[in-house]
Image (tube, rainbow, N blue to C red):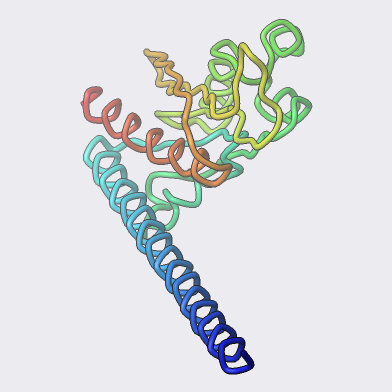
Length: 203
């Protein structure tokens, strides 16, 4: 009887050890996968920022950014490229409604009527930034990165964009999936892609 109990205990410990090893292996694989995805994403942002710099230099143009939910991430991506001072000279992080009004002139009435995450607000952000920076292009971003703050009409992941030039206003929105960082990263990548397209088309 004692031998049977001992054998059962050994079997249990072996299985438990194998389970722990399997769990550790899964966690390590997940960490490696996340690291690879993160590295690929950083590489993608850098490549896009390089392409934007080339496009702006070709057009002899400059850009400024006015950011809310991305918290300066777009400006960071653009200035990560050596020599970027040739095409960007200033940016704003207008995280609060008051900052949007004080720094780039978004009307309080617009914020009260439409909310910070709206087409109307990003248009005013972009126009105010363009005028103050005396840039050729301005890109404004405002969204709900999460995990809280969403509503049925404006869910977590919703981001509004505006790209302003001297003659055109281009607006668009997306509802991104993923966690807070993933929403912000996707917004930065999309802003870079759209900005490149606008600069190239304007040439």
